[in-house]
Image 1 (tube, rainbow, N blue to C red):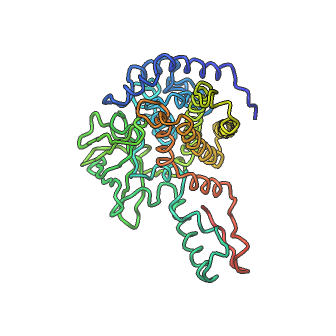
Image 2 (cartoon, helix red, strand yellow):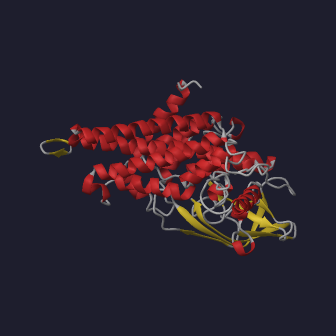
Length: 439
């Protein structure tokens, strides 16, 4: 890997940092989250014109810049530094690749140019709390424990029985877009049924990123009966579709708006050719989302550390700056090393596009952001927890992102399974009872 960025990549970073320095200070961010859209629509249009942020990773034939995931990650690192509230993540990192991968030619020709220009924003709506499972970043609870064999008590028979059940649950959860995360029936979620030549959706999805303002919803809905149930993606256009109710939710991190989307007899069209079913593409999209999120978290951690170092240079105790004390120096040095390591992991994930690398990078970046934000609050003393100071905003972003896209231990376990680290069981298995476990 060549760690040096090209002139074009450096220009993207420089241009975006200049624009955000002028128009996305903390006062502007606080004002933007209070607007009905949850972000500064004028700034979004400005970013769409120069440097063409929404279409950065969209092919040129659809009006985009034709760049790749690494350029988008670099841009998100800059937006993360200022905690910019914007539709960038949900639109460019989630909606665009899904439409590009699954949409028909007509859908791509219709949607991608408008998404690239910033005229249209989009998001993915899945049942509450299942976004990381849907994107293949994590697995179902308990699925990663089957390889944890060891002297934890109980008989060999009970351990092998537990291992078998967990392995079966893991294999079921690995069926793309077919696991429990999709809801349906008593599990909630969204149901789809045919109505004449079209489809109608019923149900709700919560914690939908930018769901209250997005002009395009990609809704995961279950179709068919229990025996042949499957999950499809549907295109819903809230501006013209009936029966759509969107409610903005109160969230821990106001710079990451979320909404509840309720669908009552809402007309929709499948994303992709009629009769097709979604297969492995979401996992590929999930790797890109993880890389972008990792870069964004690194940007937030880097900015929080930068502000904390600046404060340690001017805050005095016992007649000298607190940054001159050895204990404080060591804490800041440890944070610096953590940020640089997380940045390297995020860059590699965006460069390689490997799912395992992206999952590990996201876990490391979220953990680093939480650590840096916590230390920032501590080293700022009493003012670090006040509403007026920005330190608490970075802490809320770190805590919220880990709740939305983690937790960290499940991200790492899923990445380890994707890399094949636990293909066989451990040394405590009885002879002849080894089995392959897919996380």
